Image (cartoon, rainbow, N blue to C red; front, side, top):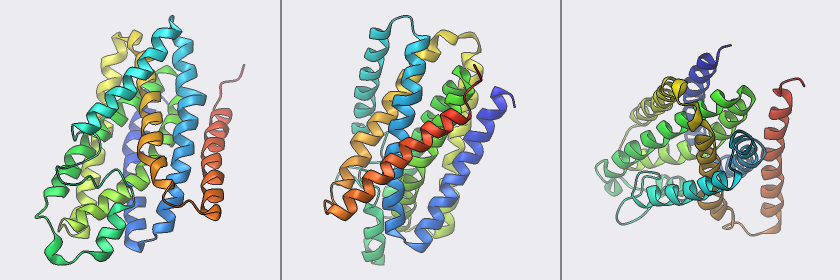
Length: 268
């Protein structure tokens, strides 16, 4: 399959798959499933960042110090974007999206009078569309550097999209949207991943020198999401049984990325 083909398949079907899987989870309101996916997603993100994206970026870059500086810049950049409401759908009085499970409790307890006339839902759509567009950029940059890297990056991004989309879906329901509307809006938002991937593919044809920097930003994105957005939620369950399960699932996420990288590695 061509590089363009890989980008189209992973951004289009990967985004659709994550939304449908997230919708299935929310329809069954299995909070424990979402919690397990979050732990796995942390491992997948950290594995893809440290075992694939960052080593590839350092290998392609002629200046390792500049590359690690790019990663630091990326972490600060994503922090600023999050503060500006573009990265995680926050609004003035509370920030629902920092806790992927926030929407579950809200939907279970919410009465019709608690709907906010779609305000939170609108913020969800704006923020998620931008987020998906950036994901498309990172996936395309990874594939253009190496197919193996593109595959493991896609796995990591899809893994963390599922619990996030589940939280988004439930927040939309809490904002007064029907299940059908919430599913449709999330599917439309996921198209931004494809758009970001295609634009990046055609723009980088004559700008290959930007690929290492984009890979550094991809690593920064995955590290930031895992460490800032997902891990804090795990500390809400400090009991030993939950901790063992979390560590096991994080290890499984890292191992799956390592295994995927090994399976798709080019022969020497």
